[in-house]
Length: 296
View 1 (cartoon, rainbow, N blue to C red):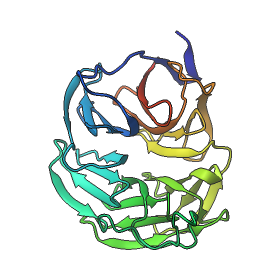
View 2: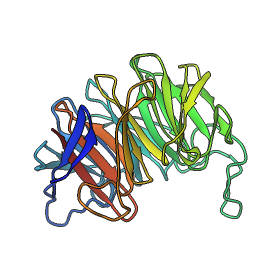
View 3: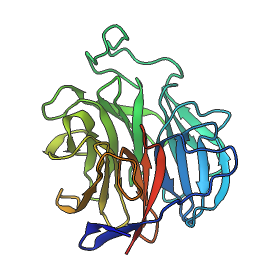
């Protein structure tokens, strides 16, 4: 089996990971996250939107069939609380590990007014939460950020109990502007990293939304995940995975051929690691699968 990555970040694909029960499918896998017990939560667009597996790929349970409509982004905190982006209903939902709802943020089924219409499908102005949000993260201090990107151009910051604190961003290609903002992560160094997908870059801000810098050279970055060792993993829709440090230095990178081949990224949309450093890669479009890469 071919090894992907380089240096300290080399991986071998675990083919056919995930033993789906009869009648189950992956669907479009919007996101993936791992809890403190190394259980893997596969957030996907199927009749079973949250599927839970152990590290070996054995199915444990599922939930969300009664309230998840359009699985897109997921974040599990270190104290095992689950935050979800349900894109089409325009909401962010906080739950327990077994799917009991704690609260919901957003005006359900009421998108904000960004000037985007089916007749004129461009974001003309930034607006409040939400118009097809994409992803979220919980800060080391308990607040949470939401990237609001498909039909908006904002990052929103909320208090731990779900009150909107402030927002930043507007449509465009300049510093602090976004073209399909798709993921956000506040690291322990006090910097907030934002995947500006269609501008093919990651922008860096303070926790108050002040622009600091940006990193070019990505291929439609969809998801940013930072592990306990402050290593950043980036799932890029353009058939690539990047591993870097918090200064933007590339530590490892591999890409696919554009075909649905085991071990090759085809349409990465979400990424997370477990306690062993193994990578779980959520894929959408024609790929529609979850791949596991075992660290070697």
